[in-house]
Length: 266
Image 1: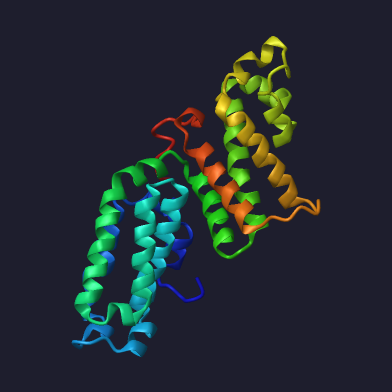
Image 2 (image 1 turned 120 degrees about the vertical axis):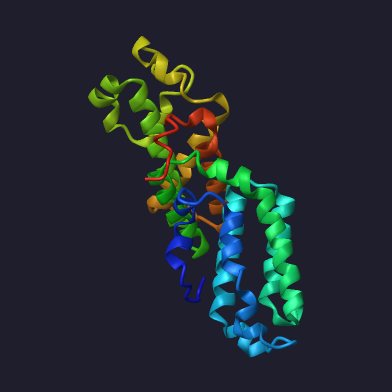
């Protein structure tokens, strides 16, 4: 995102911002409700230079692109996400838009997708606390700006905080006396079969769904690669994979220890 947006702060914290709105469809409706008054649409044909320089059009594209990234990592139906991405690509080109009606047609197509996703997307985002959203928003910003080491570190830090909270709530006394000093690597070892077999760990070992044990081990491994000079490259492909796995863990209801009230926007 290399252009200024009047909504830049909200876009940078789109997950956190999601907690304070009740509908993305309503948000986008507000963004485009007066578009016919925008300068590029004052004539029958769009003037290319005016369109490309329009702050309103740029701001709208900024929102659309970040919304698509949000949909990808919240695991919305990929076919429809790709359709939305194609619409944004066409909106970026004044030659594809050509006329105010062409712009309107693309907007309505995009809005249909937003309305289709709205309820499910909001429900997924609401499985995260505000502090978790802030960490994951930072991971998304790093990812968008090609800072792949940083994106992995921030995404896995959200996972680490979630695992820590799961354990702390299960056995606060044991956490405070012993486990608070553990690294992420040490914490996830607790969940491995044959490890930490003392009865006092029994309840904690049941916290981790079996399907997530290899996942969190992989996340921790790439967190180490990202944070320390191991010589391992963190490519776009790896960062993308680790981000998706981190979101998969965070969005699973089985790993969420919070009450409905705790998940509300603060």
